[in-house]
Length: 387
Ligand SMILES: Cc1ncc(COP(=O)(O)O)c(C=O)c1O
Image (cartoon, rainbow, N blue to C red):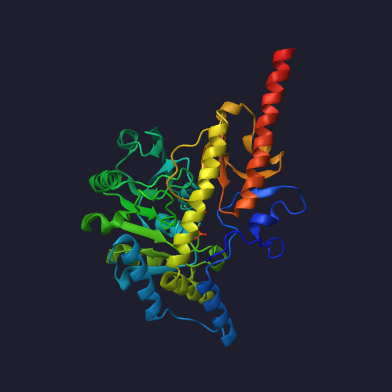
């Protein structure tokens, strides 16, 4: 019904992902956007809105709020109120706003992580208490012992990424309850980036907005959500923060002032259409991505020097390449024609991040090129042995 195999030339639309390697024989598999068209309902809504031809100042209509409230209830069984929703033009902006809004000297977060979790506190001139994620039962999980050992009384903000970019973890109810208890114990505000919430690939995993766990943590939380990753509309810059506490919300909005605007009219139009009519497309997308992930997992399984822990969500595979012993794994794979994300800005340069949110035929090419890279190392090893 939805054609995720459609060939789309993205080299003529100022596309960040494809322009990075324009004119080179390199397939981009880095920045977190997918190579798919958005759902037909989004494209039709935008076409209709553009045909109206008037693009003046725009408010947010009731239907848009209803679409958000109903989507979150439908997918996460979380009942939110219209007043809690604060529109922003991007989750990264909201992360920066959170760091500026909370009265704190430092910000606790985890590492490796999407780089803006480290940049946002720095821009707000706050110290970062970065806690390394640990490997447990083949998953990347939070290290509560290290968190307890590192927390200080002047740290009042924790920034969580759930589902986790780059490691693909979906935190369980038990894990989130433990984090909620940690935040309440230390009087921390919790900024939870849940931009990847809709992209669960493991049918046994369930996304739980941490703010939905209990009233106490709801009152301390800023939850960041967006249709941008889910429906591939990042260029339309539509996102929102959900802030149940009146006080916290006012501080967040005061920080926005008139410097940070809300969502533009096309972004709002796309958001409403996606959240109202996009469920069937999203279901099909998740199945397609799960099959892509299986291909990546099979590729890793064939190459014992690569390691990928249990990935439950996102179209981004965080691959441990430390056993290759190459100076720059990113540059190494690039020399074989694949533009992965370098692990270094995430906090570990012995990893690469592979974006598999692309049509299958292209993913096959990406994995073939990566296999060539792996085979070249084997050849080198054999040569060394013979000499
Ligand atoms: C965890 C996470 N947060 C935020 C963003 C970016 O959000 P936005 O484009 O809305 O600023 C990304 C994009 O990759 C992401 O992975």
